[in-house]
Image 1 (tube, rainbow, N blue to C red):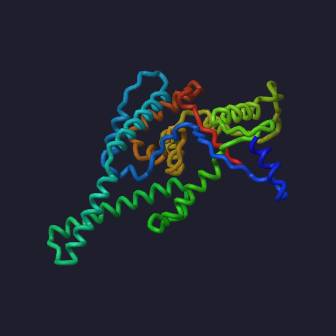
Image 2 (cartoon, one colour):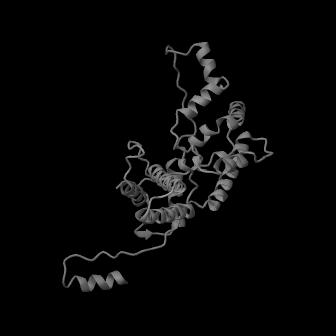
Image 3 (spheres, rainbow, N blue to C red):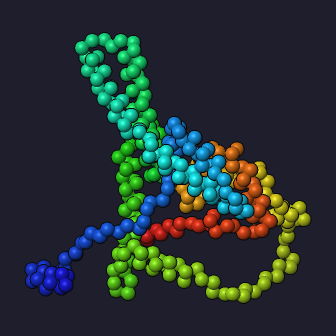
Length: 292
């Protein structure tokens, strides 16, 4: 209605119709958990992780046991983050620095006051390093080393990713859809149709006369996984990569490899024997990248 009224009055004075912009609250649900590299050096992190890894699960599926442990780790870390008082400690350190700086303008600081000043300086420095490290990880920029960072630059990169990759509405059958649930349904239907198996019986291909693998090479393809090749596969992955939607990164897996390698090898052996993955570990996020 508003567009019709505007169109009829606007065309009397201008050649083109105006663009009507609207704001809608489009919430697509809670943000997924994210594990930051800066947490590894904070007090209480290791204790929370080990408490989560000690969680007991009675499932006969080894991959479900690992998924349960990761879920417990996430819950422990969430509780730990709530108890963290970094902001409070930072404010106290900054206020103490201001007090000492004012004292230093009128007299020389004592040895004890200099030690306090240095401790507060170190707290502020570590806090700023942590913020810069988190921004680097969010921005996914690897070619700038820590120490050369530009905070405004990283903020702009993060905001640009959010703005560019957000799909707030769809044009379907002549109608703009902005409801998050309806957008999810439309994408689900489109992807189901896209990846539907068009051919149920495929022809066999004869490869007579082609090069073939030797017996040892063929056995190696179907042999048991060794801990060396599993470890190599893990260490070849970047530390910021997360193999699943749980947010647990490869840096975490590498850091606690000794605690988890036994269970990971049991998962690999169980998969080798049965050839299946439990549904609790096969979930994934589909990242929609708009091409405009």
